[in-house]
Amino acid sequence: MQTLHRAVIFVHRWLGIPLSVLFVLWFVTGIAMIYVGGMPTLSAQARLERLPALDLAAVRSTPTEAAATAASGFGGVSLTTVLNRPAYRFASRYGTSTVFADTGEPLDEIDVATAQRVAADFLGVDASSVELVTTLERVDQWTLQMSRDLPLLKFAVHDGAGTQAYVSPYTADVRLVTTTKSRTLAWIATIPHWFYITPLRANQPAWYWTVVATSAVGCLLALLGLVLGVWQFRKSSPFTLAGSIPYRGIMRWHYITGAVFGVFALTWVFSGLLSMEPFDWANAESLEIADDALTGGPVELERFPAFTAERWAPLLEGRTLKEIEFRRILDAPFYLVRYTTTAAEADPQRERLHQPYYISGRGEPQHLLVDATTLTARTTPFPTETLLANLRAAAPGANITTHELLEEYDSYYYSRSGQAVLPVLRVKFDDPLETWVYVDPALGQMLAGVHRLQRVERWLYNGLHSLDFGFWYYRRPLWDIGMIVLCLGALVTSTIGFWLGLKRLKRGLA
Image (cartoon, rainbow, N blue to C red; front, side):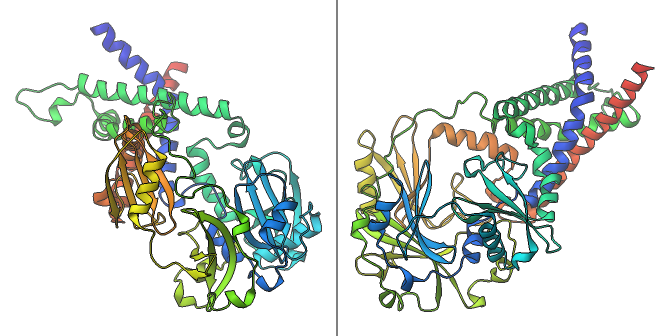
């Protein structure tokens, strides 16, 4: 037993010397990520705000005619503005095809000068202040998740904010905007926390196993520390807590803070490990519900009439039309109309959203669901019984046990910033993995599905990592204070461990 005791001390001590650096890094950046979030992105709301108004009067071709020109096969179809002209976008898993709606001609690859104007118009600056930096053939630090969008033209904007814009020469639109501030915040928080260094992150297997290995060894270090916390405890007689701690000086504080906050250090590192799904255990095959369960099949463009600006005018009064998406819902044709309002009081975030560079959104763009046959806005949700009937037909091997219209988030469908749609229809099935499906009754679409293993994973990852329990998660700054206190406690014990490790290493080298 004495040999085992010494072995545990030896392993904890020498693992702690290098890993305490990572623990310090993780807890410092973890606090920063509470407010910074992830990597810089271009939100859907910001993109919509920067789009020019869609000119329906200039539309000459129907979506069916445009589809004949586009590349074969498509999933989503929308009408938007490209190069200040109305254009149809046909999206598929192979990419995006664009056909101009005024002439019916396809979009060709744009040159640098045109891309420069695209970036300038989007950011609301003069084209002379936009300068080409490079043509990206490989991902850089800010496009690590955008490999499918390559190549991209990267422009620098001389606006005093260090703005950089990435333009696709094939779709003629801005794909990403970053600023000096957003890039700096990412370097402070997300990049070091998740090892998002370009050479490493671009190599998916190397990055994956680096995170998994360091997290696994970190779990071992924290676990051994907790074991030693119990093992080293010496119950004094008469009993006093102070007299039962066999250390003095800074080591005493390492012991105390480790005993108190070591549990959180372990759960945070363990949940970070689970975020990588190292054993793929939660991805079991669950109830299969076809993608067209609530649509009736792919979009049938011939069911959408030609655009007439006069017919749309009453519907758009007081709104600035930005984009129209073609949808099929319960076997009927609909337009999902995205727009902005001209009245600033209609959106309290509007002033912020109109900044020329916008990094993260605060919700979905404003939209209307319009019946394509009658051209009237739908103001009521789709009938619950109709949605349930379609789900039953799409899952013949399972029965619906319960369903409920949620006006508030539950533990598996939620959003701290309020971005997730409400109300939502929650439907529970009796399949072997007890699948739950969440449906948006306003748009007649499935939003999410989780089975039993994924619900367990939600608690093992988000529950342990973000401590997103309902009693304080939506009561900020209560959650912020709690997370920061716990992170600081774990940071203190890690920093003391790092200092002790340096002293031990110095003595060993001497």
